[in-house]
Image (cartoon, rainbow, N blue to C red; front, side):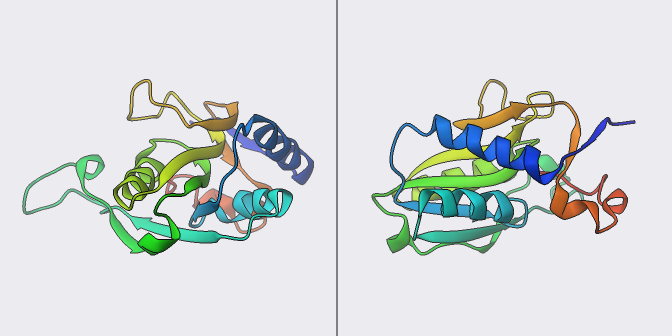
Length: 169
């Protein structure tokens, strides 16, 4: 069984502070990945007094694609929501999610921002290199490395046990 770690708000604030200390440049826009990136993105944007805040919602097929028998992790993402090109082009964009597990979602968003003419920088509170599908590729900024399933304080009261095996970040 996967090890689980429940965090409190104080621990989350320490992680946010660790991220803020790493930023070595200015960002003119932020893209928060739904849903995991909403809380850390909000906390970071408030601390940074960032005004240009957007969301990206990405979906991957839940099963193998029957027409091609392509495994799920090779399937292309569907962007349900994404900022307009004008909001990204020529900007340093901070891409925020809670955790880099497989890395599929955040790397898909990063690549789409590059395609739109922006310069993305990935940022997560937790990086799990043991689950990453991208070899030595890492987030540009991360506060902690873990092999555990992290449960954040905003998830704890929503019956997180039912979500433990459905999260595929």
